[in-house]
Length: 393
Ligand SMILES: Nc1nc2c(ncn2[C@@H]2O[C@H](COP(=O)(O)OP(=O)(O)OP(=O)(O)O)[C@@H](O)[C@H]2O)c(=O)[nH]1
Ligand SMILES: [Mg+2]
Image 1: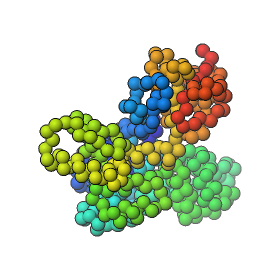
Image 2: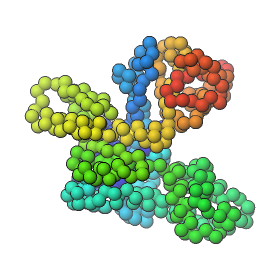
Image 3: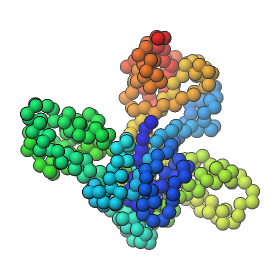
Image 4: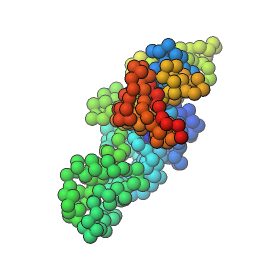
C-alpha cells in the first residue's frame, strides 16, 4: 500500500492529524514526545466514484464519494539535530524509510518554539520550521554517504563499477530507488568519473537531491483555527504544495459524525446537525467550525492526503472490472476495486497488480466506456475502468 509519513516538530499536531485521518486511537496531549512509537494506520483518499455517471450503482461509495485506503505513519516529533541522534531522531528517520512521501505538519499558529514547547500564539515564526525538516533528512542521507565515501569511491575506481550502483546499495534501505539516484546525480552536477574528488559539500548537495526525488514533501499549515492570518498567507506563498488545515476541527467533525450528531463526510465543505438535544457549548463549537469551513473550504485534512497522493506523487485511480458491460467482478459486485497507480502505469501493470497470473497471461485490455481494445502498452488514465483479458493458466 502507498505509504505517507506525517512528520514535523513536537506539538505541531501530527497525532491529531493522524487520528483525524484514521480515527485510530493515539495519545493526544500538549507536551513534546506524545508519540513515542510510530503509529501506523489506514487513511483514505477521496475520489469521485465512476458509478455516479453510469447506469450501474456500486455498493462501495457514499452517493458518489469513494474512499481508497493509503497507509499513514504518525512519526515521532523531530527536533533540530535529530540526524545526530538528538531527541527521537533515530526513530524518526527509521519511520521515514517506508514512506513514499511526507506530509510536513507545521504549527501555523506560531504557538510552539522550534523544539515544540508552547510559547503562546504568534511568538514563533512557522516559516523557520519549514526548512529544518528537509535539512534533517538531507543530513541523514548525507551522513550515510559521507561515512563510507572513501571506501566506496576507491571501490568504484578499482572495480570500475558505476557510482550509481554503489550509492544505490548504500541507500536502498532508506527507500531510495535507481531512478532517484540517477536523477539526483544528474541534478547535483557532480563529476561522475572522479567520485574520489567529491568533498563533503558535494555529498550534501547530492543527498539533498536524493531527498527531493525519494521523499517529496507537502506542507500542512495546521491550527488555522487559532493561527494569525498573516502566518497562513506567508506559508501559502512558499514554493511547495501548502494546505491550510485544522486537524483539531477535522477530529471534532469525525467524532461528531461517528457519534451520530452530524452528517459529514471527510473532505466535505459543510455538515448538517442531525441529532436533537445538543448542548449549547457543543453547538457553539460546531458553529465555530462551520465558520472555518466557510473561510477555507474544508478542514484541509482530506485535502492534504489527496494532494499528497494525486498532486505530489502524481498517482491516478483505476477501476478494474471483469465484465465490461455490467462493470462487475465475477461475483456481480459493481466496481468492486479502485487501485491507486503511478502515472505512466500501463494496462499490463494493472494486470500484474490484480494478480501475477493475470499479468503473465495478459492478452489485451478493454476500456469499459468506449469498449475499445487496448494493448499491454496502453498508458492508463485517471478514472479508467478496465477489463483485462488473460489466458487461463
Ligand atoms: N487549535 C488547534 N490545536 C491543535 C490542532 N491540532 C493539534 N492541536 C493541539 O496541539 C497539541 C499537540 O498536538 P499533537 O497532535 O499531540 O502533536 P504532535 O505533533 O503529535 O506532538 P508529538 O507527538 O509530541 O511530537 C495538542 O494540544 C492538540 O490538541 C489544530 O488544528 N488546532
Ligand atoms: Mg504525536
